[in-house]
Image 1 (tube, each protein chain N blue to C red):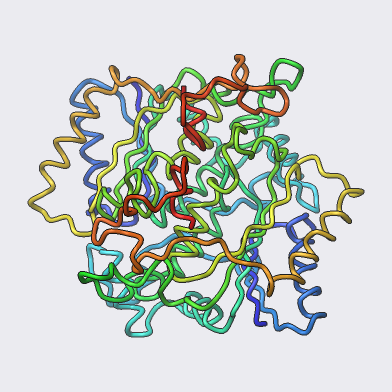
Image 2 (image 1 turned 120 degrees about the vertical axis):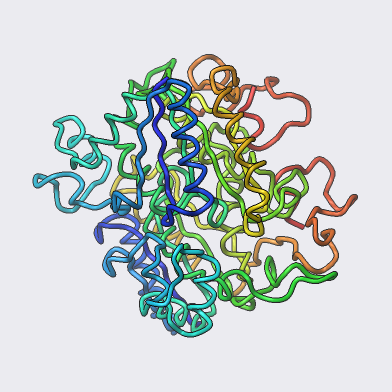
Length: 258
Length: 258
């Protein structure tokens, strides 16, 4: 297995940093190849702007057009091209980060905004009567798998079905479905550690054991069964779920899991 | 009314830029005071790191502790302190941005990550038998209102109850509830423009008219009725919604709207 870890924390000695180190050693000891994109160490540029698209960028900047043209001509900046190449090298991508304000840190969102360019992350495949582009189950990254590995400050009850933060599956849906599944990645259930704001050193071994177990069972872990866009479940082009396909009582994001 | 507009787009001549300009002129013409934080023009720093917390920051960096100490001693960086002061000046805060990958651009997430420091955005108020901090209806920004003004590339049907992206209210819940309501802001229903990837110049006047109408009716617009944390709807400290409070058939994020 070739694993790419996208890691976003400013402190190497943090819990997130320790879990990243553990992932690298565990996977390597099991005979897998591992690359790490350490976004803070790379001083990753977060903001999409005209400088991303080379000297021929139009003014005013039209991002989709500029992004697609730079991708097509190989003139995206070297940092972005390197990340795209790592993604195409990998067959497993792990995103390791703390939940900050219920989503990813800005530096990681900046990785998504810049690396998932037009014609790479989106704008792939034709639109016609039977498909609306290649996305949600098809796309550049189809055949690869991804997983979120996140730490959450609050206790698990706050992220449960009736918890005040909302269910963790729903909080992560815009990432897991909207960012990862969109360009074709199969998404494994997330590894979530709760209560990390008050976690003690004595609790770390249990967390490490749980994470190691997930890492060593990636091959046998079934992905979340998100519905594919172009295979009969949705009307085209409205992309509404066809009547009668939902399990009884299921609403919201849960409609899009089979 | 004193309105702060947090604006995140790299191109001033973009649709988002035009709508921001329209908001400024419309509100000023109606006699309101307006300030704009133009994050791209400010070259806003997105990444939380040790440099945010002054020269006395501990190593290894512990973000919550460092953030709270720097806030308490007035040693957060000047850019962050200026934004906190603008928030305390305003009684209405508008966030104007394009939806990129179903959430805010990285530069705006970096504004949240850095400006909503410990003891300002979170970590406010005591934890005891009857409250779990001052948040979700209480907090530093209580008594102020906020609204998202976003552009979405795809058509509205994709963001509807059965649409493949998920309902727009659920996509925005982590922002509206988790980021805005958390420190006490009352959140007005969002202004969302759909189909902006294919919007023509001829369609702009209708969009401008709709936005102007929202801007001129802010005072009479009722906020989303998110449930307050410490006023009897939730068990403390599990923060689970008490049995029997949910409208029939409501699940997921919708449980937390009264």
